[in-house]
Image (cartoon, rainbow, N blue to C red; front, side):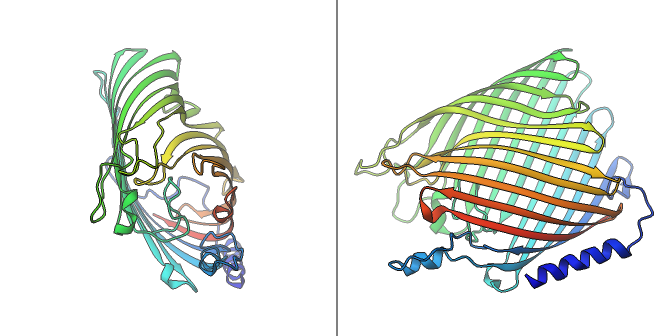
Length: 420
């Protein structure tokens, strides 16, 4: 904890000593070559984490191994985060964006936990005068962090894995107020260790949709998607005849907005029908899978009432498998709000609250239920357009009716960011 306060005092000293002569403006972006902007960045961050393994901190006298797994240990973690963004503007057509973000974490005491994440991104947005619309969003992430995947696999343990998330669309403006789209999405997840074979899968999803404008910058939409999941890895001596391969149909509707509207993002809700290819998990037919039909959501709405205030609202709901070799699944429902408020041109206050509920189908007699609470608050100071500092606090709590899945985690952070 002593290191946390020393780091915070250093940040305060920077706030007092460094000059503040330039007005607040977009950070970085000095390297311009015609329509191309190059934005390199570097952030160093100190984090005091009071529960690095996300354990519940309780003792189990009859099971020393469980006690060790649930130990609550703190550590100081230093992060180094290099970044590079490339933005190419296609005048009156759109833009192409490429990005890289790294995160290298170094533990003070538990050095065997050191990890590194690297991610690359591509975003293409193109609109031709004749009505053609093209969109590509791709995110490749190579991870080692202990925060697990959305499927809640091995949270608290460093695991090496990579994911690639691709979303594409091709559309056409048939009339000024009506347009149609074709969609293709692909998601692949692969772990390095064969012991994690049950997490390796590929999703392919195909869709069609139509949008109609009913306000100057507001569109309503209706979409249909058909998806297939196939698990990729089989352990030695195993078979794929009983894994969790599945197919689904999804219908969704909602609202979307033009890029220059005060509202942005999407209001997206729908219903999904999911069917498994294999009814049983083994040849013994002792464990059976049940198909899952339920409502789903993928809503993220941004609202900027003034140039200094920015709100975000998120609502999501999805069905998630926990592994390829079980019949366990859960519905993941999440709602969250956040705000960013600029103060006196150079300060930015960030705060957010999120609640999510994970409802499992197992165990049958008393199915697992997790309530997750996340909160964050931070203050950033833009000293110049090329340098900024910040302090923040994150709170993460999971309350589960299965005690060994519960934990509380507090993080205190201070950071220094450089842009060019």
